[in-house]
Each structure stands twice: as structure tokens, then as C-alpha cells.
Length: 195
Image (cartoon, rainbow, N blue to C red):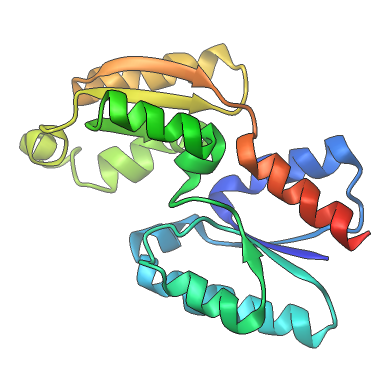
């Protein structure tokens, strides 16, 4: 059994494997940096699917659509492989219903996960050039009103980092503990269905 996953959720999958005793589940991660070029995700995933299937392994893809505009789903259809539900990790961590409710409540929301809180300076501040061009802050985030930290873990240090991120972006702050959300449910269905 192979789970092809985004590196941004590798820690959570490793923890779920440990908690649930999914010893036969093999994790194959792709770089989280693929999110900078989502059009490259389908091809990278397809290469890993082909390799796993050539080895006779069943496959599950631990990605949401992740900005591929449905192209990932076309690859998965060709190979008869399932993936995580939703458009992105925010949706599957929060669960679709809760995520939609949050977006209806405030559509101008910027989301962070544990991974994004830990990587905030590298991916957001430096990645968007805000360290060199702080005047871009209003260009990127001027239309956002709040930052919601969808926490997978109960970690006070990460909550403080997320609060600091909200202050840097000049956004209202909210934290919601999601745990593993639909990530756990989907992986459990795959692991138990393959046992």
C-alpha cells in the first residue's frame, strides 16, 4: 500500500501511521514546493503512481486538488486512484462542511496549518519577497481580514507563531483545532480497505 503525499502533510501521515499501526502503509512524499507551480503536481504524482503500480502496489493520493484546476483528477481517473477530498489541505483538515461555513462567514480569510506556521517566514515572508519589499504587503494581503490557524496539534508555541504571523499580515487572528480532519478518515478507509 502506497500513499503518495504532499510533503506539507508528511508529519501528520507519519503520526497517523504510528497511532493506527498502519505498518504496511508506505509513504512516498513529493516536495511541498510543488505548490508554487501546481501545474507540475499532476505529472509528479503520475510518475509515482506508475512506479507503485508497476510494483503491484495499491495507491492512494494524499493531495486535494491543490490548485491543479482538475488536472490531478484526470490523472487519477486514468489510473483508477482516489485522493483526499476538497480543493486544498485547509478543506480536508477543517472538513468540507466546516470549511465552507468559515468561508461563508468571512470569505477574506487567509489560512495556516501546522506546516505553514512552522514555514511561515520561509514560504510567506521570504517566498513572497515581503522581507525585501514590505510595501507588497497590501498588494498581497490588503483584501484579507482574518487569519485562521487550522491547528493539527495543540502546541502553544505554534499558536504564538501563528498570532505573530497575523500581526505581521495585519489580520485578525483565530485558531481552530482540527486535528487530522478528513485526512485521518480517508487514510483509514484506504488502509482498512487494503488490509
